[in-house]
Length: 223
Image (cartoon, rainbow, N blue to C red):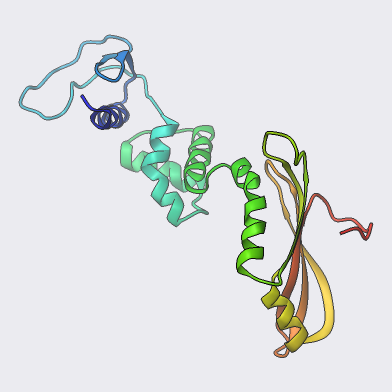
């Protein structure tokens, strides 16, 4: 049995237990042999003329967040603001299973992790993002503050300032001599603020000039 066929079998079993509402366990779960039993070892009816697996009679419901995240990841990708209430209704309609709010929240978190990846990993690569901006957008300004730059593990990101050359030139050539500051808060695991310096162009529209990602807004005057 190949690794590919084993993974296919495992996914098929997760689908089957959700549809038939029972719980199973692996007696053997290796690269060459898989043995699966109903967790309650209940009696089941086997129909040799049917392509379906045995129908378990247990009452337990298995709600696997990993499986649900895989099944609905494309829906989360196309509709990132999909409400948990609507998602729970979809699971009930598709699989006949009522899932609680906490499980639905976990499924959404897993699906977003599959789509966007780890936030910590993205912050660890922000130094390379700054280097790419300087390489491919000449005369831009990127200044970054990190902690632990000389340690073996990835440095801790603190704050960053960036001004793209195209925006700098646009402000100098087509905007009024007036600037203001706008901000946007972000929360969750990595709270902070994005500060944006904006001006007004010839059409009286907002024109972004530079931005900074910081821990908090302050008036120290330090860059």
